[in-house]
Image (tube, rainbow, N blue to C red; front, side, top):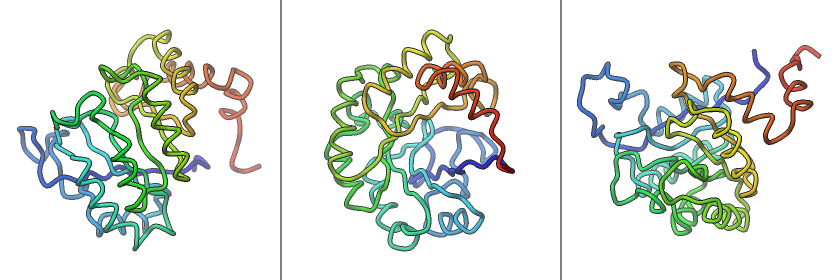
Amino acid sequence: MTGRLVAVNLEPAEQSFSAGSDEDIWSLTNGRKASLQNAKTAAAMGADMLVLTGNPGIGVQNKAITESLAAIAPELGDKVILVAGKMHASGILSEAGRGIITREDISEFADAGADVILLPAPGTVPGVTMEYIRELVSYAHSLGLLTLTAVGTSQEGADQQTIRQIALMCKMTGTDMHHLGDAGYIGMALPENIMAYSSAIKGIRHTYRRMARSINR
């Protein structure tokens, strides 16, 4: 209906670190787990991309992402785009700050079959600078991978000036794709922030063109 790619998040974790029942939004339900069966189901339903990552407090380790990739890529690597990485620590203290993702992680993701590396956007995680992410983007590109910089720290609900600053820093890293999280109104970033982000990286002319395009022509 939108004429856009559809991506589905799957989380490589055995259990959630969060308290609460299965109805709790932060508890890891079976359908969200990064199992091969769930990946096959998502692909069969028409998903274009599978994003192996973790929500807050779920407890997703980079090692688990690599293991999930290694299981999914041989089966679906030629059918869907596989994205791997984290935009925040996801409850793993040892993988906070710059430890969220390193060159070693990117190398392991690449070997396991990733097409795109997900990285925290500069300025969204303490200690994660534009220079650091630019280095990781360049390294991922050297391996033939694309990159996705992600805002997943509730700053998608910040003021527009902050959004524009993050957007420009992401563009300066050389990233290929941009992500805004859902912590604005429930389930999506603030619409005005989506507009601000888009206009910051490509101007009003191209932003309006994308908004006005129809898949029927």
